[in-house]
Length: 195
Image (cartoon, rainbow, N blue to C red; front, top):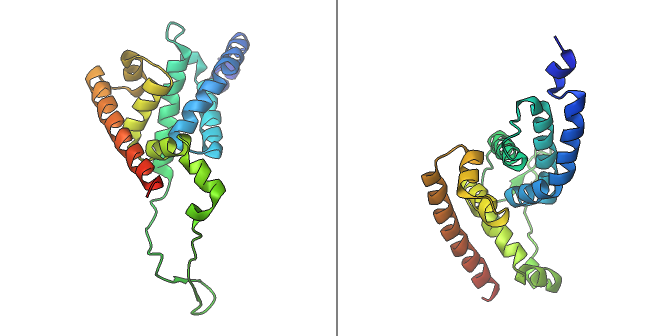
């Protein structure tokens, strides 16, 4: 048994091929990861974990399939797995004092700065990038993934169906609903800017 292939999924000849694919698709993968996660640090982590998994299972990659589709499928699985691992956040009123454990009955009140009054933040918020990313972040995962793959990465419906493991009808439905929700959320975020 070839233990190197068993543990890594990649033989030496495949290593060069994989390295060239990483070099070719890294920027594109990071861009998709950023659109999915909404921030730089998580996008880097998602990109790295996706390439690590792709490397580990490179021996299973079918060369007749476009590499980016295979990688996007891995990335969407990693993203969903990470979402499932994250703890659910408990909402707390801003008016309710927080108790500090181990400090007796000490309580603190939250003070949230008014960032809307900061001219620099206001200028950044007025740009299209931030409202668009906020609207993307607010979409359900399936809709966000479909919209990012179609409208940002330009994949065909068939390629998206392959990446997301669903039917063409499901892709069309997710894209239609995702785009509709995205338009609504961008309008709402832009209208808040002009209040």
